[in-house]
Length: 404
Image (tube, rainbow, N blue to C red; front, top):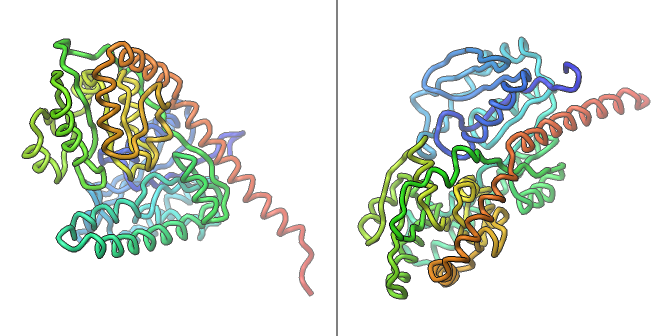
């Protein structure tokens, strides 16, 4: 370690895809590059290659034809360990002080194994509630069965996946999680130290100044994958109730794609669907939203909620998962227990323009306080603590008298 700056080898389960893990990973890498910190990133791509960008070294590894689809653009390769010797050679040359894994996948499994083999301190961050994703998708897949049967089956699978994930996270010595509920769960399940790692937000890209509409229409927005685990059919249920209860002009602006899009398009009357967009188009879409509706119950954090806040949109979220910990209740949005709560709060904001404007301002102010630099400074402190714990364990072992 050069001074107080550790050499970090990072094994993200997502980097080139479009999701919250990839976005956070790119931000972390950008932080290391900006500060000139030595950083190695090992990840999956469509071909194997090595390259360098400033202080950051990259090793991309191609997945085999047997790689199985797990999500949009995301696969698991059962033959990924064939790259082990290549990664080991790269680690020996790079000489990391600490290694960082992000999930239960082929890349991070390799990182965890090599951390153990090379006796390098290991940090693990929790980004995705895999157990809840599995339960949601299975519930939709087996929806033709009696609900009691499906509930028992998916509950069993959810418990098993969660138990497996917690067992996996016993390998790192320091854990990072995006909300306090997950921090507590990991500490209890793994007997490891867990720390809070929130997410930052780009307040220039996501900014009310990008708004392009002023037609008096109230726009309820959603950004994310249109899949079962995002609970997106609540958007249709909310629209249906609002059409019954108000004659005010409104529409839904839905950004994203996925296998639920066809159902939503067939069943929603006011919705505008953009598909996947990014860059300036995404900035404008967020800024054109007056209220952000995020019914997901499986998100560990919910980057889109902070992006909506930064764009000046208060948020309506569920009381399950990470987004509930972002919303400042009654100030930047509301936490909803059920559909009735979504409907009541949506109508309240439609009927009280002064209240809506005040919450839009508060949402923007809150987002301005969530800096990426402060987030990653805390991550680097976790790296240092992991290294200290490893050194202390070595010293204690050396100081212990030999057993007779």
